Structures are given as structure tokens and as C-alpha cells.
Image 1 (cartoon, rainbow, N blue to C red):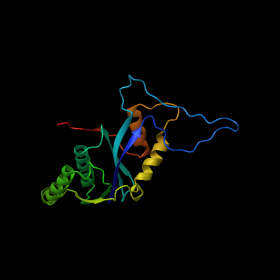
Image 2: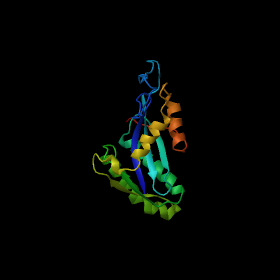
Image 3: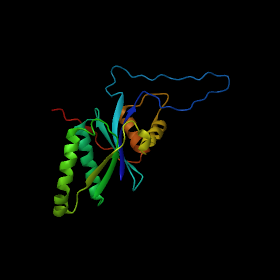
Image 4: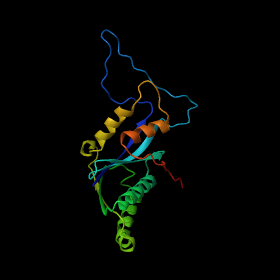
Length: 188
């Protein structure tokens, strides 16, 4: 079983945190900004899967935003990883984001699951995906959501803006996972 979600990691927006200051001193917040010449995006999108068996998070960053084609590439990667571990079924709990319930993703899931038995006969691998969609606007039902909140608080740098590669590296370090090449959007 796995709990899947996407999240944006902002280079500028400060996570909701408690703050304090010295007695009789005003609380000072530093507004972060980036130069117009900065080539990095203001935020990075990331897909994550919280595995129920290991309680670890599998991460993949995305160049751009989450769309159906990127979701399919991400699911293929998840299946490859789980198949290499000998897993046969993934019960995938996720929300009703438009790119996850799109016809393209549902068609891919149907085709993927239809071909899994043949894959298993040929090479004894293949992971069937059983999707379980959460009700709309119910993030508290997905146990990966609090992980995102704690991760944002842990990696945030209050006095300077992180570069995109540094932000991604900190996120992967926090979740103790490998920083892989980002999934690129294929524009037709």
C-alpha cells in the first residue's frame, strides 16, 4: 500500500511556523526574493509515495508542473522500483487531482494492469496498481500530507533563498532518498 501526493517546494514562501523574539524586541521577518536573472524556478514540484511497508517516502521531482503524462512516467518509475523488490501489487491511495483522474491516466492504468499478467509469465515481474481515490478536499485522510509540512519546516532557510538544486538536495536528504533526474514534461 502506498499513499501518493504531489507537493510544491517553494524557494521563497516561508512555511507556517511558530516564531519568537528577544524580550521587548520586535519580531522581524525577512522577505525573501530572487533576482530577475535567477534561472531557477520559484518552486519545484515533487511527486511522493509514502510506502506503508517501509514508512519511507519515494520522491521524484518534476520539471514544470504535474500533468497526466508526467504522472504516467512517475507511475512507471514506481512500478519499476517496486517490481525490482519483488512486489506484485500496489494499492495506491491518492487524491482526485485532475491529472490523476484524467482519461489519459485511467486508460494507462487499465492497459498497464491488463498487461501485468503477461509480464509476470515472461519474466516473473510486474506490479499491478489498484487505485483508491480519496474524497475531494480531504487532505487529512492522506498520511503523506503531514510529512510534507514537517519537511518544509525542516529544510527552510529563513535568511536566504536556496538554489533549486540545493532545495531538491535538502528535500531528498530530509526524506533519506536518492536525488534522481527530474521528470521532464513531454510537450506534443
